[in-house]
Image (cartoon, rainbow, N blue to C red; front, side, top):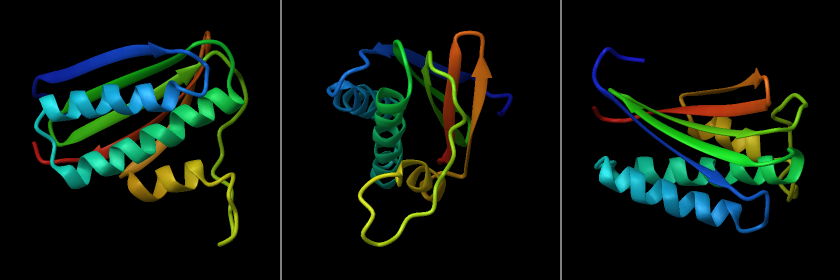
Length: 130
């Protein structure tokens, strides 16, 4: 990211149904403290919900959420202790599942995932005003 001063916060979440709500609240509070515009915040909150829900439903172990603001970008990173390869799947207009990563892809400037020693993390980057 940029050479400007970066801000980063992280939290651990239970691998439970309430994780997405806890993640949204943490993210909303952080983005407000960083002075993010509402339209950017809405996109990041929706992506946050989708990534955390995927980690809870398809991952294993503890879920971690990291937010990083570095110049014109905010990065949202959700990790879990599970394996597997996250993939965006095509879906139809009546689909109610398997839309999460496609939504993240549509909302973010870019997204991807990284394997780690203790699982994987899925990230999305959003263009914001610096």
